[in-house]
Every structure is written in structure tokens, then in C-alpha cells.
Length: 320
Image (cartoon, rainbow, N blue to C red; front, side):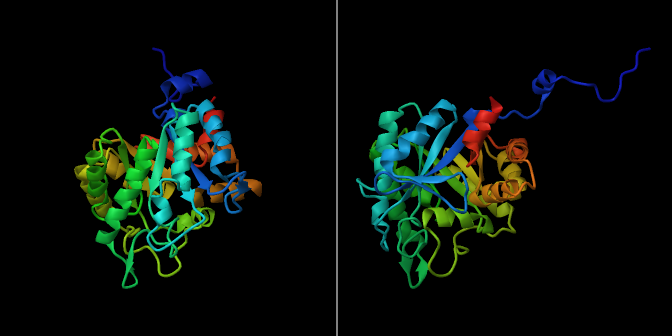
């Protein structure tokens, strides 16, 4: 009788062949900050290695993304002009509209996703219209739909509403369909928690609220069933894909949503997660490559079909 050890020694090739979880560049999306102006490439202090680009410099990073064969890029606009109604967000010559047109002209095969929100464009830094010193959900829907339509008219492939307003998916789907943008997909930030992990992003995008917080419209970090409820509502209203945000601290939520829905689900490894890894690696406290790969694998293992991460380009290179 031949006995075998409980664990067989495996070559790297065999480990790759038999692994239960697969990570590929095509399932990654890279967030990019686009700042109004010209000839701008500037560092983001709280996110070492990440930069803000003016539209004319955007092709430098888009070319790298295209060569890496990642799934796409998610664009965030940073305007010069901000006001209470976020008018720069739906201006046909706004920074994000310029970026979308340039991106699709120069890299037609690269999937371009536009973030649909108001916080980067409002003078108060909140994600909607303010009435009586609070964000008014219903008044905001018209503006979010206007932003999404403007991006679709500029050629975006996918719009990603992130304001967490009730009814935003329905409002956006209706206006897109009414203007014959039936093929423009909606990638909903269906589950977005009022998290402390967003700090570096708010510094990068200049989107910190000038008063109060976003707990009235973003989710309570203690709730899981609410996440599933939000996800199912958004699917019913017309969302094609869903985002769970943040990533690492909410893998249980990701798993719950994935197991109870039939659309692609993304996990967003947010700015605070990136900044923690970077800070620790720059201090020599951990192996950046190992940790970034391990976190990405954990997201896929929990059910992510898509990973939105500031490490997308590095991960694609490391996988090669």
C-alpha cells in the first residue's frame, strides 16, 4: 500500500494550475485624478506614487494602463471652479468631459469609467444639493442625472454614481435611455460606508466637506443587511454592476452581496488602504508587493469579480 504525505510538494507551475483563486489584470480598474489646467503632473502627498494629471498629460498614464491590459480606468475630476450646484461637473467643457473625450480618442479600446458625484465640484464638499444645512436627496437626483448624461455625451463607457442618494440609479437610467444612451452601463456604488479610510482621497480630490459629515447618506459601518438591501434596490432600478466600498475591512459585506445577487460585484480598495501599505513599506515594515497581492487575492476570494485599486498597474506588472 502506497501512502502519500498529507501535503504534496508542488512546483510553482502546479500551484498556479491548482489554485482556487485567480487574479488577472483584466479584472482591475485604476482610479485616476484629473485636474483642470495644462501641463500638470503633481504628486499627491498622502498617496505616494499617485499623481494628479491635467487632461493634456493624461495620455501618459492611460498608455501605461492600456499596455498593462487592465480592465479600465475610473476618472475623478478636480475643477478650478466650485459652486453650490456643482456646475463644473456637468459642463460640456468641464475637466472630466475633456478627459473622457481625449481618452476615447487616444485609447478607444480602453474602458473609461466616469465617477458621478458632486463632492469634488461643490463649494461645500458634500455630495448633493444643500437645503436647510443638509443634503437634500430628491433635489440632488436631477443634478446626478445631468452629470451622467454629460459624461455619456462625451463618450464614457460606464458611469459610476457614488453619491449614495436614494433613487439615483433610476434617475440616471431614465435620462440615459431617454437620450438613446442605452448601452452606457451603470456601475453603482451601491454599498458605500461612512468610513475613515477615505481621508487621502479627499486630500487628493479636494473634496472634504466644509461642515458636518456624510453619515446621513453614506452607510453605517455596523450594518450588513442594509448593504444587501441597497444592492438589491440598485439592481432593481437598473444598475449593471455594483461596488462595495471600502475593500479590506468589508470583505464580509462583499461576500454577502455576491452570494445574493447575479450581477458583477467590485471591491474598491480605497485610498486609506493604499496609504497604509505605502507608509509601512516605505518604512521597511512590510513587503509592499506581497501585501498588495495578498489583499487583492483576499478580495477575489471573498467574491469580487472586479477590483478597483490604486495598485492596479503594479499588480498587472507583478502578475507578468
